[in-house]
Each structure stands twice: as C-alpha cells, then as structure tokens.
Length: 197
Image (tube, one colour):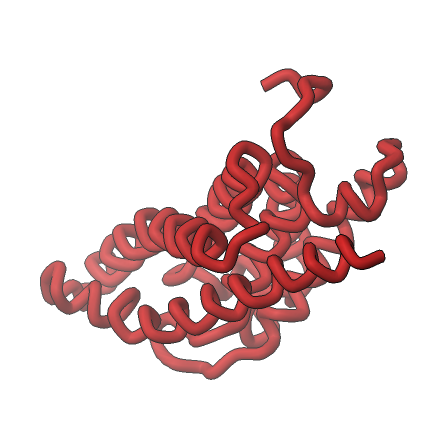
C-alpha cells in the first residue's frame, strides 16, 4: 500500500498528532514498544505460557497507531528483547523458547488491527472493535500454538494436539475475551472524548 494514499479512517493517535514527521513516527513507534513492554510485566507465571496483559498492549498499539506504525512498534519491541528484559516476567529472547511463536505473531496482529481500523473504522464501534481484537488473537494463536507444540516435541513432552491446545490456548481464551472487551470499551470511548473537544 502506498503510504501517501489517503485511508478511509485515521487511527486515534494520528488524529491527535496529525502532522507527520520522522521524529513523530519514531517517538510513536518507541512509545508503542515501551507500552507493550510495560503491559508484559503484568503477568502470572504459568507454565509453559504465562498469563499477561501483553496481548492487550499489542492490540491497543495496533489500533491506536495504525497498521504501519503498529507493526513497526512491535518489531521494535522484539528487537528490544534481544538485550533488554522487556518480555513477560522480565525475560529476553534467550528465555522465551516456548513463547517465541506468540512473540513473532505480535507485529502481524498489530498490523491486522491497524489495517481494520484504517479500512473499516473498527475502533469507532464496540462490536467492531471486539471482532477486530478477536481476529488478531487468532493470528497470535495461529503462530504461537504450533511453535509451542514444536518446542514441546523437541524436549520429548509432546502429548498430542489437544494437550498443546490445553497448554497454549484454551486456558487463555476467557482472558483474551476480557481483554478484547476492555479494548472495545476504551477505543470507542476515546473517540467520543475526542469528538467532544
């Protein structure tokens, strides 16, 4: 997509900061990556996949920044994890073997949410926001669960598809729904507040 092409809808942060510059984009990308890193630290250390607010951060960043900057913010987050303890539980890439698939999916999920915002204004409606967030969660699971199965097989602990789903998806579905509902409340409310200004 041509970056100069006019999109039907403008993401939230780009509406608040409409003057585009390299400095603005850099600050938004870094700010988005730091926000996700902060959300990742709110975690419950379950094995082999922790319960965190990380995915909520990923989806909010994608919606607020749009597809391009949201994607770049999550790429920056992954690069920061090479040296900094920005992942859940204060980990770097060196300690994320089981969850690497989920992490790699984050930029794609942020891109998808941002794209849906830019094309269809999904962040203006609670129901549309909810659908966009659930679709992005499917992207995260589509990469994270198979990778988890692969890693469990590598250490001789693979016990079938159902066991992998139980380890890496099923316990998280209710929490992901709650996080999607939170996003569905936050984003349209933010737009209403902007409209009153």
